[in-house]
Length: 70
Image 1 (cartoon, rainbow, N blue to C red):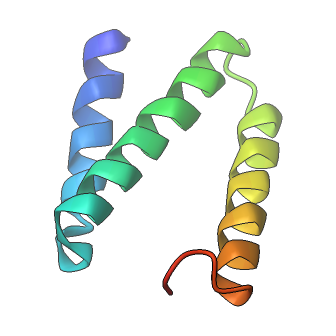
Image 2 (tube, one colour; image 1 turned 120 degrees about the horizontal axis):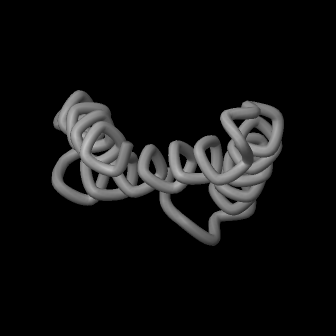
């Protein structure tokens, strides 16, 4: 499971090459985090869905208020 998680996270990150190296690393790490949550939660997706929504909400709010560049 660990190898599959690492490989799928690396592929997911590499798909985001258009965002540059920071985008590749960030999305790869998010894929690793969310995949790990999925596995640790007994292969139930809802906790990962909640965490993904929380991350997106914080990210979009910080872009809106100018804390991070969009």
